[in-house]
Length: 95
Image (tube, rainbow, N blue to C red; front, side):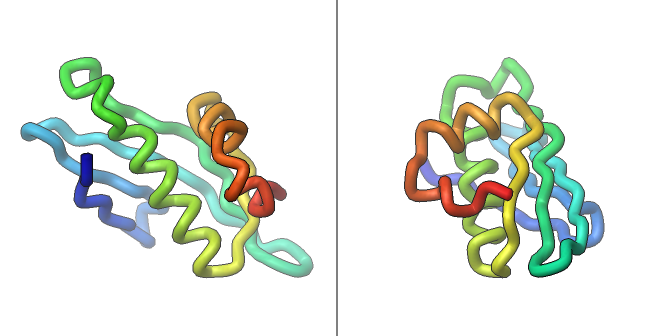
C-alpha cells in the first residue's frame, strides 16, 4: 500500500495521515566529522490504523531521505532497528 509520506524538516519528522489518524516518525540530526547522522528516535502508528505497513513506509521514507542526503542512520527506535535488520539494502547507512 502506498502512503503519502511528508518530511517536515523543521520538526525533524516524517508523517502521514491514514483514515484521519496522524502517524509519525521522529528523528534527531547531528553533524558528524564526515557526515550528518540521523537518529530515528520514535515511530508512532496508533492501533486503529496499525497492521497496514504504515510504520514500514515511514522508516523507508526516512532511510531514503538519509540516503539522498548522504546521512548515516542510528535506528534508536526498536521498530526502526528491526526494519533495518530486515532490509539489507539499507545496511550501508548504519552509523
